[in-house]
Length: 466
Image 1 (tube, rainbow, N blue to C red):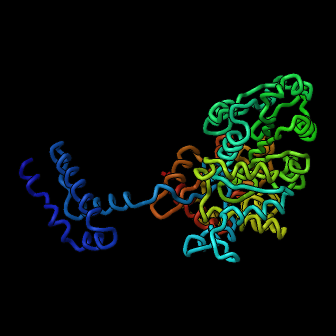
Image 2 (cartoon, rainbow, N blue to C red):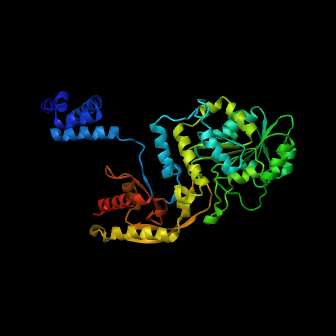
Image 3 (cartoon, helix red, strand yellow):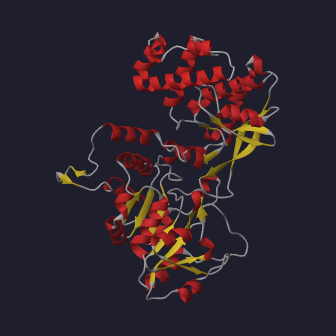
Protein backbone atom coordinates (compact mmCIF):
# COMPACT_ATOMS: atom_id res chain seq x y z
CA UNK A 1 0.00 0.00 0.00
CA UNK A 2 2.80 2.44 0.88
CA UNK A 3 4.46 1.71 -2.45
CA UNK A 4 1.26 2.51 -4.31
CA UNK A 5 0.80 5.72 -2.33
CA UNK A 6 4.34 6.82 -3.21
CA UNK A 7 3.57 6.27 -6.91
CA UNK A 8 0.88 8.95 -6.86
CA UNK A 9 2.10 12.04 -8.75
CA UNK A 10 2.64 15.31 -6.91
CA UNK A 11 0.44 18.36 -7.34
CA UNK A 12 3.12 20.10 -9.40
CA UNK A 13 3.67 17.09 -11.64
CA UNK A 14 -0.01 17.02 -12.53
CA UNK A 15 -0.17 20.78 -13.05
CA UNK A 16 2.68 20.55 -15.57
CA UNK A 17 0.78 18.17 -17.87
CA UNK A 18 -0.49 19.68 -21.11
CA UNK A 19 -4.08 18.85 -20.22
CA UNK A 20 -4.01 20.70 -16.88
CA UNK A 21 -2.00 23.63 -18.27
CA UNK A 22 -4.81 24.14 -20.79
CA UNK A 23 -7.39 23.69 -18.05
CA UNK A 24 -5.66 26.32 -15.87
CA UNK A 25 -5.64 28.81 -18.74
CA UNK A 26 -9.36 28.27 -19.22
CA UNK A 27 -10.59 28.20 -15.63
CA UNK A 28 -7.81 29.73 -13.54
CA UNK A 29 -4.85 28.26 -11.62
CA UNK A 30 -6.42 28.23 -8.15
CA UNK A 31 -9.54 26.32 -9.20
CA UNK A 32 -7.49 23.62 -10.93
CA UNK A 33 -5.12 23.32 -7.95
CA UNK A 34 -8.11 22.73 -5.65
CA UNK A 35 -9.38 20.03 -8.00
CA UNK A 36 -5.94 18.36 -8.15
CA UNK A 37 -5.65 18.25 -4.37
CA UNK A 38 -9.19 16.90 -3.97
CA UNK A 39 -8.63 14.12 -6.52
CA UNK A 40 -5.26 13.17 -5.03
CA UNK A 41 -6.86 12.90 -1.59
CA UNK A 42 -9.61 10.72 -3.07
CA UNK A 43 -6.99 8.56 -4.79
CA UNK A 44 -5.15 8.06 -1.48
CA UNK A 45 -8.37 6.93 0.21
CA UNK A 46 -9.04 4.44 -2.58
CA UNK A 47 -5.58 2.93 -2.26
CA UNK A 48 -5.93 2.64 1.53
CA UNK A 49 -9.29 0.94 0.98
CA UNK A 50 -7.62 -1.59 -1.31
CA UNK A 51 -8.73 -0.19 -4.64
CA UNK A 52 -6.37 -0.24 -7.60
CA UNK A 53 -4.51 3.02 -8.16
CA UNK A 54 -5.68 5.19 -11.09
CA UNK A 55 -3.09 5.82 -13.79
CA UNK A 56 -2.07 9.31 -14.91
CA UNK A 57 -4.69 9.51 -17.67
CA UNK A 58 -7.51 8.47 -15.34
CA UNK A 59 -6.41 10.91 -12.67
CA UNK A 60 -6.15 13.78 -15.15
CA UNK A 61 -9.62 13.02 -16.50
CA UNK A 62 -11.05 12.91 -12.99
CA UNK A 63 -9.55 16.36 -12.31
CA UNK A 64 -11.04 17.72 -15.54
CA UNK A 65 -14.44 16.27 -14.61
CA UNK A 66 -14.28 17.86 -11.18
CA UNK A 67 -13.44 21.28 -12.66
CA UNK A 68 -16.28 20.91 -15.18
CA UNK A 69 -18.71 20.03 -12.40
CA UNK A 70 -17.57 22.99 -10.28
CA UNK A 71 -17.90 25.51 -13.12
CA UNK A 72 -21.21 24.20 -14.49
CA UNK A 73 -24.05 26.60 -13.53
CA UNK A 74 -26.70 25.01 -11.34
CA UNK A 75 -29.35 27.15 -13.05
CA UNK A 76 -29.66 25.78 -16.57
CA UNK A 77 -32.17 25.67 -19.43
CA UNK A 78 -34.54 22.71 -19.60
CA UNK A 79 -37.08 21.55 -22.17
CA UNK A 80 -40.57 21.69 -20.71
CA UNK A 81 -42.57 18.86 -22.32
CA UNK A 82 -45.11 18.65 -19.48
CA UNK A 83 -47.80 20.75 -21.16
CA UNK A 84 -47.95 23.08 -18.14
CA UNK A 85 -47.54 26.52 -19.68
CA UNK A 86 -46.75 28.64 -16.61
CA UNK A 87 -44.72 26.02 -14.76
CA UNK A 88 -43.69 27.55 -11.42
CA UNK A 89 -40.89 25.04 -10.86
CA UNK A 90 -39.50 25.62 -14.35
CA UNK A 91 -39.33 29.42 -14.24
CA UNK A 92 -42.95 30.39 -14.99
CA UNK A 93 -43.50 32.53 -18.09
CA UNK A 94 -41.00 32.51 -20.94
CA UNK A 95 -40.03 35.95 -22.18
CA UNK A 96 -40.65 37.11 -25.74
CA UNK A 97 -37.73 37.75 -28.09
CA UNK A 98 -38.42 41.47 -27.78
CA UNK A 99 -38.22 41.26 -23.97
CA UNK A 100 -35.01 39.23 -24.10
CA UNK A 101 -33.37 41.74 -26.43
CA UNK A 102 -34.49 44.61 -24.20
CA UNK A 103 -32.89 42.96 -21.16
CA UNK A 104 -29.59 42.45 -22.98
CA UNK A 105 -29.60 46.04 -24.19
CA UNK A 106 -30.32 47.37 -20.70
CA UNK A 107 -27.61 45.20 -19.16
CA UNK A 108 -24.88 45.94 -21.69
CA UNK A 109 -24.90 49.75 -21.71
CA UNK A 110 -25.62 52.71 -19.49
CA UNK A 111 -29.25 53.81 -19.64
CA UNK A 112 -31.58 56.59 -18.53
CA UNK A 113 -32.93 54.37 -15.74
CA UNK A 114 -33.27 57.25 -13.27
CA UNK A 115 -32.33 60.16 -15.49
CA UNK A 116 -34.65 62.50 -17.37
CA UNK A 117 -33.17 63.22 -20.78
CA UNK A 118 -35.58 66.12 -21.26
CA UNK A 119 -34.81 67.84 -17.94
CA UNK A 120 -31.17 66.81 -17.75
CA UNK A 121 -31.55 65.72 -14.15
CA UNK A 122 -32.53 62.81 -11.94
CA UNK A 123 -35.76 61.09 -12.87
CA UNK A 124 -37.77 58.05 -11.73
CA UNK A 125 -37.23 54.45 -12.78
CA UNK A 126 -40.95 53.76 -12.55
CA UNK A 127 -41.94 55.89 -15.56
CA UNK A 128 -40.56 53.25 -17.93
CA UNK A 129 -43.46 50.90 -17.24
CA UNK A 130 -46.07 53.04 -15.47
CA UNK A 131 -47.31 54.97 -18.50
CA UNK A 132 -47.85 51.78 -20.50
CA UNK A 133 -49.61 50.05 -17.61
CA UNK A 134 -51.97 53.00 -17.19
CA UNK A 135 -52.71 53.19 -20.89
CA UNK A 136 -53.48 49.49 -21.11
CA UNK A 137 -55.61 49.26 -17.96
CA UNK A 138 -57.20 52.66 -17.43
CA UNK A 139 -55.50 53.11 -14.05
CA UNK A 140 -54.50 56.60 -12.93
CA UNK A 141 -51.03 55.49 -11.78
CA UNK A 142 -48.86 52.42 -11.44
CA UNK A 143 -45.91 51.11 -9.47
CA UNK A 144 -43.74 48.03 -10.06
CA UNK A 145 -42.08 45.99 -7.29
CA UNK A 146 -40.30 42.64 -7.36
CA UNK A 147 -43.31 40.28 -7.16
CA UNK A 148 -47.01 40.23 -6.35
CA UNK A 149 -46.46 39.08 -2.77
CA UNK A 150 -44.31 42.16 -2.25
CA UNK A 151 -47.01 44.31 -3.84
CA UNK A 152 -49.61 43.01 -1.37
CA UNK A 153 -47.34 43.52 1.65
CA UNK A 154 -46.40 47.05 0.59
CA UNK A 155 -50.01 48.07 -0.01
CA UNK A 156 -51.17 46.71 3.34
CA UNK A 157 -48.33 48.38 5.23
CA UNK A 158 -48.70 51.73 3.49
CA UNK A 159 -52.49 51.93 3.54
CA UNK A 160 -53.74 49.91 6.51
CA UNK A 161 -51.05 49.46 9.14
CA UNK A 162 -52.64 49.27 12.64
CA UNK A 163 -56.10 49.38 11.03
CA UNK A 164 -58.85 46.89 10.25
CA UNK A 165 -58.84 45.12 6.90
CA UNK A 166 -62.11 43.43 5.95
CA UNK A 167 -61.88 40.28 3.84
CA UNK A 168 -64.27 37.44 3.04
CA UNK A 169 -63.49 34.22 4.88
CA UNK A 170 -63.44 32.35 1.55
CA UNK A 171 -60.49 34.48 0.39
CA UNK A 172 -58.01 33.67 3.17
CA UNK A 173 -55.88 31.80 0.69
CA UNK A 174 -52.45 30.22 0.74
CA UNK A 175 -50.35 30.30 -2.42
CA UNK A 176 -47.08 28.51 -3.17
CA UNK A 177 -44.22 28.76 -0.72
CA UNK A 178 -46.46 29.12 2.31
CA UNK A 179 -47.62 32.68 1.50
CA UNK A 180 -50.79 32.93 3.58
CA UNK A 181 -53.00 36.01 3.56
CA UNK A 182 -53.61 35.96 7.35
CA UNK A 183 -49.88 35.65 8.08
CA UNK A 184 -48.93 38.41 5.65
CA UNK A 185 -51.59 40.67 7.07
CA UNK A 186 -50.21 40.11 10.56
CA UNK A 187 -46.68 40.90 9.40
CA UNK A 188 -47.87 44.10 7.73
CA UNK A 189 -49.37 45.35 10.97
CA UNK A 190 -52.91 45.34 9.63
CA UNK A 191 -55.71 43.77 11.64
CA UNK A 192 -57.56 40.96 9.91
CA UNK A 193 -61.35 41.08 10.15
CA UNK A 194 -63.07 38.06 8.58
CA UNK A 195 -66.55 38.49 7.16
CA UNK A 196 -69.12 36.01 5.86
CA UNK A 197 -68.65 32.27 5.64
CA UNK A 198 -66.47 29.95 3.61
CA UNK A 199 -68.98 29.63 0.77
CA UNK A 200 -71.33 32.63 1.08
CA UNK A 201 -70.55 36.26 1.83
CA UNK A 202 -72.89 39.25 1.40
CA UNK A 203 -72.51 43.02 1.47
CA UNK A 204 -74.40 43.06 4.77
CA UNK A 205 -71.58 40.98 6.29
CA UNK A 206 -69.13 43.80 5.51
CA UNK A 207 -71.54 46.43 6.82
CA UNK A 208 -72.04 44.55 10.08
CA UNK A 209 -68.34 43.88 10.64
CA UNK A 210 -66.84 47.28 9.92
CA UNK A 211 -65.97 49.88 12.53
CA UNK A 212 -65.71 53.34 10.90
CA UNK A 213 -63.15 54.43 13.50
CA UNK A 214 -60.68 51.62 12.86
CA UNK A 215 -61.39 50.61 9.25
CA UNK A 216 -58.30 50.82 7.03
CA UNK A 217 -59.38 49.18 3.80
CA UNK A 218 -61.50 46.45 2.25
CA UNK A 219 -59.55 43.65 0.57
CA UNK A 220 -60.65 41.15 -2.06
CA UNK A 221 -58.38 38.25 -3.04
CA UNK A 222 -59.02 36.41 -6.30
CA UNK A 223 -59.33 32.61 -6.06
CA UNK A 224 -56.33 32.12 -8.31
CA UNK A 225 -55.42 28.51 -7.49
CA UNK A 226 -58.69 26.92 -6.36
CA UNK A 227 -62.45 27.02 -6.88
CA UNK A 228 -65.49 27.21 -4.62
CA UNK A 229 -68.54 25.82 -6.38
CA UNK A 230 -72.11 24.96 -5.50
CA UNK A 231 -74.06 26.96 -2.91
CA UNK A 232 -71.98 30.15 -3.09
CA UNK A 233 -72.39 33.93 -2.98
CA UNK A 234 -69.93 36.80 -3.22
CA UNK A 235 -70.49 40.56 -3.65
CA UNK A 236 -69.43 42.09 -6.95
CA UNK A 237 -66.40 44.34 -7.14
CA UNK A 238 -68.66 47.32 -7.80
CA UNK A 239 -70.65 46.59 -4.62
CA UNK A 240 -67.47 46.34 -2.54
CA UNK A 241 -66.11 49.52 -4.10
CA UNK A 242 -69.33 51.31 -3.21
CA UNK A 243 -69.21 50.37 0.47
CA UNK A 244 -65.50 51.23 0.72
CA UNK A 245 -66.05 54.64 -0.81
CA UNK A 246 -69.06 55.31 1.42
CA UNK A 247 -66.73 54.96 4.39
CA UNK A 248 -63.87 56.78 2.63
CA UNK A 249 -61.40 53.86 2.71
CA UNK A 250 -59.53 52.23 -0.17
CA UNK A 251 -60.81 49.06 -1.84
CA UNK A 252 -57.92 46.77 -2.80
CA UNK A 253 -57.95 43.62 -4.92
CA UNK A 254 -55.19 41.04 -5.16
CA UNK A 255 -55.70 39.45 -8.58
CA UNK A 256 -52.77 37.08 -8.18
CA UNK A 257 -51.96 36.08 -11.73
CA UNK A 258 -53.85 38.89 -13.41
CA UNK A 259 -54.32 39.21 -17.16
CA UNK A 260 -54.72 41.89 -19.78
CA UNK A 261 -56.45 39.55 -22.26
CA UNK A 262 -59.77 37.75 -21.95
CA UNK A 263 -59.12 34.02 -21.67
CA UNK A 264 -62.60 32.94 -22.82
CA UNK A 265 -61.90 33.17 -26.60
CA UNK A 266 -59.19 30.54 -26.14
CA UNK A 267 -61.59 27.93 -24.77
CA UNK A 268 -60.87 28.72 -21.13
CA UNK A 269 -63.08 30.09 -18.38
CA UNK A 270 -63.10 33.85 -18.10
CA UNK A 271 -60.27 35.13 -15.93
CA UNK A 272 -60.87 38.61 -14.46
CA UNK A 273 -58.72 41.20 -16.20
CA UNK A 274 -56.93 44.12 -14.59
CA UNK A 275 -58.96 46.49 -16.78
CA UNK A 276 -62.23 45.07 -15.42
CA UNK A 277 -61.11 45.63 -11.83
CA UNK A 278 -60.11 49.22 -12.49
CA UNK A 279 -63.40 49.88 -14.32
CA UNK A 280 -65.38 48.39 -11.40
CA UNK A 281 -63.95 50.99 -9.02
CA UNK A 282 -61.15 49.06 -7.33
CA UNK A 283 -58.71 51.62 -5.90
CA UNK A 284 -55.61 49.40 -5.77
CA UNK A 285 -55.09 46.29 -7.92
CA UNK A 286 -52.08 44.02 -7.53
CA UNK A 287 -51.00 41.31 -9.98
CA UNK A 288 -47.99 39.28 -11.12
CA UNK A 289 -45.88 40.18 -14.13
CA UNK A 290 -44.58 36.68 -14.85
CA UNK A 291 -47.78 34.66 -15.09
CA UNK A 292 -50.60 35.41 -17.53
CA UNK A 293 -49.03 38.76 -18.34
CA UNK A 294 -46.12 36.78 -19.79
CA UNK A 295 -43.36 39.11 -18.64
CA UNK A 296 -40.54 39.09 -16.06
CA UNK A 297 -41.04 38.44 -12.36
CA UNK A 298 -42.63 41.60 -11.02
CA UNK A 299 -45.46 42.82 -8.83
CA UNK A 300 -47.76 45.30 -10.53
CA UNK A 301 -49.65 47.85 -8.43
CA UNK A 302 -52.23 49.92 -10.27
CA UNK A 303 -54.94 52.34 -9.19
CA UNK A 304 -55.66 55.79 -7.86
CA UNK A 305 -52.83 58.28 -8.18
CA UNK A 306 -52.99 59.53 -4.58
CA UNK A 307 -52.71 55.99 -3.20
CA UNK A 308 -49.85 55.04 -5.54
CA UNK A 309 -48.04 58.19 -4.37
CA UNK A 310 -48.36 57.01 -0.76
CA UNK A 311 -46.90 53.65 -1.73
CA UNK A 312 -43.98 55.26 -3.56
CA UNK A 313 -43.09 57.26 -0.46
CA UNK A 314 -43.15 54.25 1.88
CA UNK A 315 -39.65 53.20 3.09
CA UNK A 316 -40.28 49.57 2.06
CA UNK A 317 -40.62 50.54 -1.61
CA UNK A 318 -36.87 50.97 -2.03
CA UNK A 319 -36.24 47.50 -0.63
CA UNK A 320 -38.75 46.03 -3.10
CA UNK A 321 -37.76 47.95 -6.22
CA UNK A 322 -36.95 46.21 -9.49
CA UNK A 323 -33.77 46.56 -11.52
CA UNK A 324 -33.24 47.93 -15.02
CA UNK A 325 -33.37 44.56 -16.79
CA UNK A 326 -36.76 43.75 -15.25
CA UNK A 327 -38.16 47.12 -16.27
CA UNK A 328 -36.76 46.71 -19.78
CA UNK A 329 -38.39 43.28 -20.18
CA UNK A 330 -41.68 44.48 -18.69
CA UNK A 331 -41.80 47.51 -20.99
CA UNK A 332 -41.10 45.32 -24.05
CA UNK A 333 -43.84 42.89 -22.98
CA UNK A 334 -46.36 45.69 -22.48
CA UNK A 335 -45.53 47.12 -25.91
CA UNK A 336 -46.60 43.81 -27.45
CA UNK A 337 -50.02 44.27 -25.84
CA UNK A 338 -50.19 47.89 -26.98
CA UNK A 339 -49.52 46.77 -30.57
CA UNK A 340 -52.01 43.85 -30.34
CA UNK A 341 -49.19 41.33 -30.83
CA UNK A 342 -49.50 39.41 -27.54
CA UNK A 343 -50.72 36.14 -29.11
CA UNK A 344 -47.94 36.12 -31.67
CA UNK A 345 -45.05 37.50 -29.62
CA UNK A 346 -45.55 36.46 -26.00
CA UNK A 347 -44.83 32.74 -25.45
CA UNK A 348 -47.53 32.23 -22.79
CA UNK A 349 -50.25 33.47 -25.13
CA UNK A 350 -48.74 31.80 -28.17
CA UNK A 351 -48.91 28.48 -26.31
CA UNK A 352 -52.45 29.11 -25.06
CA UNK A 353 -53.54 29.98 -28.61
CA UNK A 354 -51.88 26.91 -30.22
CA UNK A 355 -54.42 24.70 -32.04
CA UNK A 356 -54.67 20.91 -31.86
CA UNK A 357 -53.92 20.32 -35.59
CA UNK A 358 -50.64 22.24 -35.29
CA UNK A 359 -49.72 20.33 -32.12
CA UNK A 360 -50.65 17.02 -33.77
CA UNK A 361 -48.39 17.81 -36.72
CA UNK A 362 -45.40 18.45 -34.44
CA UNK A 363 -46.06 15.33 -32.38
CA UNK A 364 -46.27 13.29 -35.60
CA UNK A 365 -42.94 14.73 -36.77
CA UNK A 366 -41.39 13.61 -33.48
CA UNK A 367 -42.84 10.12 -33.86
CA UNK A 368 -41.64 9.80 -37.47
CA UNK A 369 -38.13 10.95 -36.56
CA UNK A 370 -37.89 8.46 -33.69
CA UNK A 371 -39.30 5.59 -35.75
CA UNK A 372 -36.65 6.20 -38.43
CA UNK A 373 -33.92 5.19 -35.97
CA UNK A 374 -33.22 1.45 -36.43
CA UNK A 375 -32.32 1.08 -32.78
CA UNK A 376 -35.79 2.22 -31.69
CA UNK A 377 -37.91 0.05 -34.00
CA UNK A 378 -39.30 -1.97 -31.08
CA UNK A 379 -40.33 1.04 -28.99
CA UNK A 380 -44.10 1.61 -28.86
CA UNK A 381 -44.89 5.20 -29.85
CA UNK A 382 -48.27 6.83 -30.35
CA UNK A 383 -50.01 10.19 -30.76
CA UNK A 384 -52.66 10.58 -28.06
CA UNK A 385 -55.40 13.01 -27.10
CA UNK A 386 -54.71 14.60 -23.73
CA UNK A 387 -54.77 18.04 -22.10
CA UNK A 388 -52.42 20.91 -21.32
CA UNK A 389 -52.89 23.26 -18.36
CA UNK A 390 -52.13 26.94 -17.87
CA UNK A 391 -50.49 26.45 -14.43
CA UNK A 392 -48.90 29.07 -12.22
CA UNK A 393 -51.96 29.24 -9.95
CA UNK A 394 -54.06 30.42 -12.87
CA UNK A 395 -57.40 29.06 -14.07
CA UNK A 396 -57.70 26.09 -11.67
CA UNK A 397 -59.53 23.13 -13.14
CA UNK A 398 -59.21 24.50 -16.68
CA UNK A 399 -57.41 22.66 -19.45
CA UNK A 400 -56.67 22.91 -23.16
CA UNK A 401 -57.05 19.93 -25.53
CA UNK A 402 -53.74 18.84 -27.01
CA UNK A 403 -52.03 16.12 -29.02
CA UNK A 404 -48.99 14.55 -27.40
CA UNK A 405 -46.42 11.85 -28.05
CA UNK A 406 -46.64 8.83 -25.76
CA UNK A 407 -43.82 6.34 -25.20
CA UNK A 408 -44.62 2.94 -23.79
CA UNK A 409 -41.58 1.48 -22.06
CA UNK A 410 -40.97 -1.04 -19.29
CA UNK A 411 -40.16 1.71 -16.82
CA UNK A 412 -41.43 5.21 -17.64
CA UNK A 413 -39.94 6.44 -14.36
CA UNK A 414 -36.48 5.27 -15.42
CA UNK A 415 -36.84 6.97 -18.80
CA UNK A 416 -38.10 10.18 -17.16
CA UNK A 417 -35.00 10.17 -14.95
CA UNK A 418 -32.74 9.61 -17.96
CA UNK A 419 -34.31 12.60 -19.67
CA UNK A 420 -33.92 14.77 -16.57
CA UNK A 421 -30.28 13.74 -16.11
CA UNK A 422 -28.87 13.50 -19.65
CA UNK A 423 -25.28 13.18 -20.80
CA UNK A 424 -23.19 16.34 -20.78
CA UNK A 425 -24.14 18.88 -23.42
CA UNK A 426 -27.76 17.76 -23.75
CA UNK A 427 -30.51 19.85 -22.10
CA UNK A 428 -32.65 18.15 -19.43
CA UNK A 429 -36.14 17.23 -20.61
CA UNK A 430 -39.03 17.34 -18.15
CA UNK A 431 -41.96 15.13 -19.16
CA UNK A 432 -44.99 13.69 -17.38
CA UNK A 433 -46.25 10.16 -16.77
CA UNK A 434 -49.86 9.13 -17.39
CA UNK A 435 -51.32 5.60 -17.41
CA UNK A 436 -47.81 4.15 -17.13
CA UNK A 437 -46.69 5.98 -20.28
CA UNK A 438 -44.23 8.83 -20.74
CA UNK A 439 -46.03 11.81 -22.27
CA UNK A 440 -44.38 14.66 -24.19
CA UNK A 441 -46.66 17.62 -24.98
CA UNK A 442 -45.53 19.85 -27.90
CA UNK A 443 -47.56 22.82 -26.61
CA UNK A 444 -44.77 23.83 -24.20
CA UNK A 445 -41.78 22.77 -26.31
CA UNK A 446 -40.31 25.63 -28.34
CA UNK A 447 -39.90 24.83 -32.06
CA UNK A 448 -36.14 25.34 -31.86
CA UNK A 449 -36.02 22.68 -29.14
CA UNK A 450 -37.41 19.90 -31.34
CA UNK A 451 -34.05 18.46 -32.38
CA UNK A 452 -32.47 18.59 -28.88
CA UNK A 453 -35.63 16.93 -27.58
CA UNK A 454 -35.42 14.13 -30.14
CA UNK A 455 -31.71 13.62 -29.42
CA UNK A 456 -32.44 13.38 -25.70
CA UNK A 457 -35.27 10.87 -26.24
CA UNK A 458 -33.10 8.70 -28.51
CA UNK A 459 -30.21 8.71 -26.07
CA UNK A 460 -32.50 7.97 -23.16
CA UNK A 461 -34.24 5.08 -24.91
CA UNK A 462 -31.03 3.54 -26.25
CA UNK A 463 -29.50 3.66 -22.76
CA UNK A 464 -32.43 1.62 -21.41
CA UNK A 465 -32.67 -0.93 -24.20
CA UNK A 466 -30.85 -4.17 -23.16
